[in-house]
Image (cartoon, rainbow, N blue to C red; front, side, top):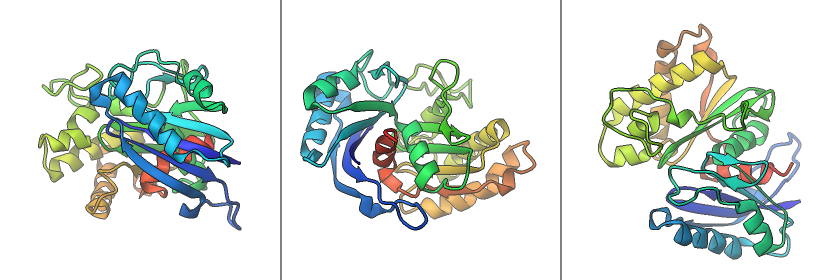
Length: 281
């Protein structure tokens, strides 16, 4: 089955055709993602401009082989009813029935999923989290998103909105107010947008992310931590990972913290595309 996977972000929209290739070890590889295009999301210009960018990305990637469309978008959202609720990084996207709109426009089955939930599932099943039933995934880019896989399935919580770890407050006295409206969220302090504002240097960034992940380890005790997003996957990536592996155990009460791997996303910047397609499995 070929699924058009679409990853909607605050600064870009990436789309590509994803066909599962069953290898000897049941792993996917980069060759299974084809026709990838990236366009600006134009999110800051409002809903009309950004939805037009989304339709354009799909139209440029769609061909006769595509049987369904999976869209990974920032939360909060309602994956059951296909509705985008009120994502901080997509101004104007409030109560948008995106799955229905896309079905009517393209005439194909459409599902939506929280972008990081989708990426977490893709990495857990076929990427850096393979072999682990419990995976914590975070994308550190323009914002900070996260997804949790427990027992091989997305953990959604009581109301379907779990996993918004980027909006955990790590400094309640901070003057940095997050897009969600709360001060001191880890996203406000250590996302790519925060770094671009020069709110922190590399060492302070590592301190903040390390403390946050230490808390995640204390709370969830995951089998593996998978980190993606532009900040973690750029040229400084391996140095950041090495420092985080040293720091996180010092910031967690979990005595097994040092045994928990902290690894880069296998699919890299394509994690969202693959994850959007995997939600059809």
